[in-house]
Image (cartoon, rainbow, N blue to C red; front, side, top):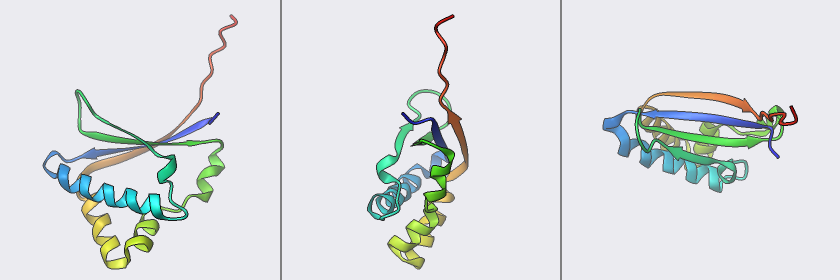
Length: 114
C-alpha cells in the first residue's frame, strides 16, 4: 500500500475556467501518451460545493524516491506537442490559474489497540 500521496491543487480563475479546462486536458493527453507520463497514476477531484474552484490531483508513491523517476510536465508537453504548441499550451494553462499549491502527505495508521 502506498505510504505517500503527492497533492497538487490548481486554483482556477473563474473567468478562465474554459481556458484552464482546455489546456489541462491537452496536458493530460500528453501525460497519458508519453512513455514517462504519469497519466495512469493520477486521480482528480474538483470543488463541488463551497470555496474556490480547485482541481486537485493526487499521485500515490511507495517512497519519496519515486519522484526521482518523474519527468516534469513542461518537458512532457513540449516533447509531445513540439516546442511552439507546447509552450503555448503551458502558458495558457498557467495564466488561467490564481495559484497552484503542492504538498506531500504520509500515510498515518492509528494504533487502535489502546
